[in-house]
Image 1 (tube, rainbow, N blue to C red):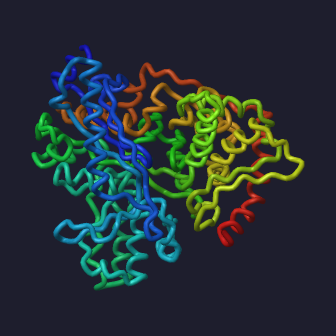
Image 2 (image 1 turned 90 degrees about the vertical axis):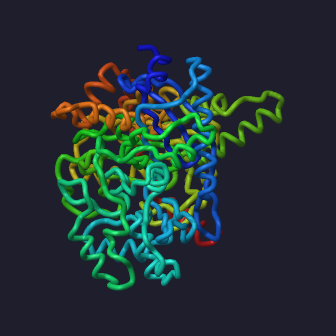
Image 3 (image 1 turned 45 degrees about the vertical axis):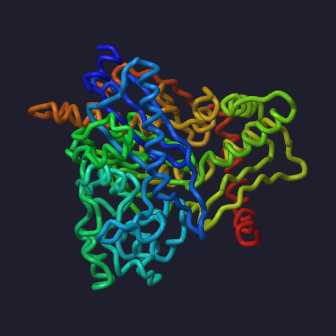
Length: 534
């Protein structure tokens, strides 16, 4: 059927994702989720308040309403239809972090995002105690740190959740999470989709009487396709204050941006992987066997279906590159030749192709925030060069792109030493919109072929829309079979006719990036000194 007919009849799926810089809504045809019918977005930004990276909850709701209203306008413009219902909805957001509420549902402390690195003592303690790597940004590390710091709010604590879980609960009254997002709160049991009960018991024994039982604090964990509730009347009013959208729409389990990135890049089956580049940058590789050891560079999380994933998560992604692009955009405007952001990015990224394979001796560190993979508790963006370096625009931009992948490459080399094999590696994020540049350099950084699909720029909002469509497909199937598994659904329905461009690693780029990475690793001492003294 046509897009207009699908919208009128409600044969659609809506995905909403709270990214670091944009809240995005994406509407797809539920029978053909590869077909994007409309999009809407709203820009927002985190703030550093009293040393804490945070977003105000009022901004969550005003931003959501703005993104949904923009989507409704896009539907009207594209299809000449008023958006009054959808077939299913999904919510995704930045993983991890800490949203703590009392029994009345009141926020106890400002939202602590994944970007905060103040949980070192708790993360180290829990990693040793559990025998499982607990990253600084995980919710359980934030909770334990609050206990260690004797924070007053702990005495009133009734629930802890992620941003996706919070939004989902307000829209549906269900306190649940998709297993992928849940795996960033607390470790998931091997071969399962629920929290590890043995570790929960260990945690409860750490500080008896100081906290309610951990199980009561955490949202329930659900696999992809499960019933996660439906839109309430109050939720409909929150999402669409105009009153056009009615209640009763089913929801898929809310997910984190890592899970939606895996879906958006067709990387949920064992031996597949993806790289997501935005404010942060991370790689996810679905494992076909357990790792042999614990590594602080690697997180163990889960796909939305519950399969084990090794994750290399870097707090710093494309933000510093965007800041430099903004500088050049202002120069273009001041010189009388204004250009929009996309045009500036396109020029700068293509200029990087003319840079030396090792960036000519120029080093760039994109560390706006701390970077736990390399042991940095705070960030100081730096450009460093020796006096004899070739300081050209091409080398500067190549250094920024290489620097964006630097910490990721260090983490992925740990995974390679574990002997983990990857059959397919997909990339997504706005930086890949300029064809053949960031993709080529990522292939060099990882020394592996990198694929980018047509949906790369839609990212996680499209990924959660696909999960919402999958929920609808499972609900409509009277007898779900193996064909209803998420991996098969993606292969047979979503990506059956997908087109992707593949960049193979260029030997000269691989050698050049390796030389760059050696200098990058050595220069981390400079970065650490900047953190200590500036």
